[in-house]
Image (cartoon, rainbow, N blue to C red):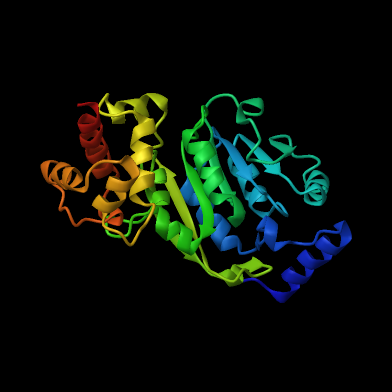
Length: 287
């Protein structure tokens, strides 16, 4: 439970350092220690692990991470928060504070070898952040993230409710929701609830190449997926016909030959279904 006294302490800190949490930066500080403990437990961080934390804010999650991990690298964009964090953690030998934009940050400059990501992620950067760290050259062992509940649910969707975001994450790792977190566990309180999400079994470049196995190029796979989700209300064959310039009748034939219902919509396909479909379309276009 978050006491009024604790919230007042947080407000006093912000006032002292001129910190004004802003919506456009997604600055909602997690204050509930029980939620932080669950994030640490879910991440399975040990004293052998290096952890990358994004947007440490007031350093409340950071405090728990430095007690558990061998090293923590915390990347903060806000200059005033960074100044506060430097003061707060002045004598913390296993913490490296970096003032930078995480979307422009080269993780290799601060971390060599394996690492995990644990973060209360600013809502505004979720998609860009996931793309950078799931498809970049230095993928983490796992992600334990606090995200908007709706976004977490979209990422973990099953066929029938799939989206471009779900495919974009599920191709590279296995996401699951750990716990829903109340909006009242933050200050300032956001308008929506959040959820702890974990992404494990992250594929490296070799594993991604093995997934495609020469059936289709990664570039064409994503071209097909993006075309498929371009108009969600349309049946998939309509999107594919217009997007790939293939006669509608031929697209229906391809769907049937690949054992798909010709009335199927993009949200009904799993990642493996998209692989099978894009391979069939690629074969047709090569004729």
